[in-house]
Image (cartoon, rainbow, N blue to C red; front, side, top):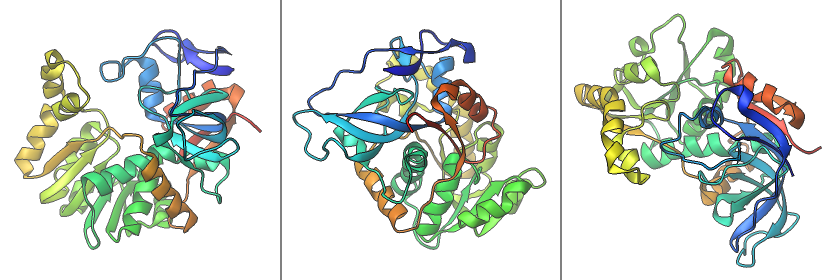
Length: 334
């Protein structure tokens, strides 16, 4: 099969295009002919090797974490899918490989594709949709009437989070640049803060939930926007020791995670706010629930641009530049 893969960590130059054997099919696996795949920050972080402590892979490694396509074959113990089904998936963290003509995924991370979405639209949603769901529903337990601040409301995760928070009945405030204010309001934000002309922590100081999708200085400033007893959920650059424990990282490395997450942990303590670092887990049942929201018109994808498969390098570069509004998608077939 054709695929884009790496044999070592590094910059854009390490990404190769070539032929690799199709992955083996296990008894509870689904083989999918990939029609489209989307690009996420984890893809270039894996390529760079910055995530190697949490995600130690073997080479050659096919990149790509979510996709949509058609079922080609199922393992003997698979009950929910059959050849010909249109599906979408966020692949298991230990088995990426969406930037290829075929991918194999465990049955429990796959769901039927929403019928109202094209393959390209569907491919854009699994990772960002599950991230938003797990941050707002599972971790923050957002409820009607609460106020939530979503950073980068025009981005891949942010645009879904705004729509989901609106559906959950929350009052939604989002940050965005001036050119994206109307776009983010269209997703359902009650208020949009132009982060280039306003300091969001001066505008929002009583949020029940702050969802940080940006990191760095934005993460630390976010604690000022949460009310006492509120929660900041972050998906960016400061994983904490709780994540290290839950992922089975060697105790020898726990002090590293404690040090990396120390500033956020201290800021949470200082402001009387809870803090959770989230690394999303693939979940087929939650994908089905997101699909139901799509079918009901409560959730829509936001695709910035679709690239042909041969231009996967260019697609990743465009996404990595930070200029995309929404998701960057690769059309593998069609």
